[in-house]
Image (tube, rainbow, N blue to C red):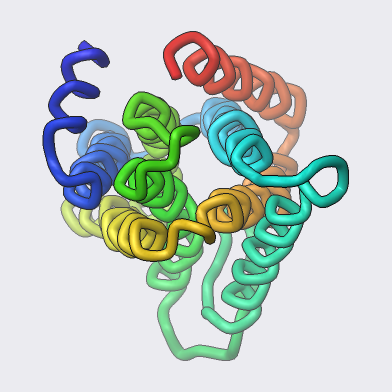
Length: 272
């Protein structure tokens, strides 16, 4: 199945392929959000385990799919070789740090909103938090496809597909993590689903931007890969992990994280 997908994406424009791949990641977010039609609440232990799994996938993807290729394609030796990855990683984290301070948003288990003061409702702030989370995921997929468009040997359609698959898998619990709290706040099932899936609509946009940028400016590819990795790690440390530590399910969340890391590592090494 994966071979067929890779073959098809290799036959079309890489930017369009990035768009299709990110539509898949958005679709799995929508699938997760659709759970709200069947349940009004989800066991907190299960949700924390799934959020931990999400964090594990993101950390593994950041290294195996983004940082390692960024270092491999950089020229030079020793510290010179790692400079693009280090600079890109720092810029990615700084970018998300800046958005986190500017964009008003509310994390799932936190009572106080972050970012600039805003009259927006709690439901909107919650959706904005997950939307912020999804920007680097879309960029990561797009940047890899952009590398293919630029003809970079270290970038492959197969690797980009595996990354999209991993991000899609962890987007499923993200969709649940948005729609369920909205439902508990009293929102209808339809609206809870709508806002749950809407949180990932930014991914196709970010993927196209990343693919186009890299395809036109090939030398930035290692920086762009590391940028996406830094942004993803920032999200995991600043948002995902703290949210799993708010209740009494820290062990479940930790094992979920380990499981997610193993799944993404296995996908990338075995199939990528």
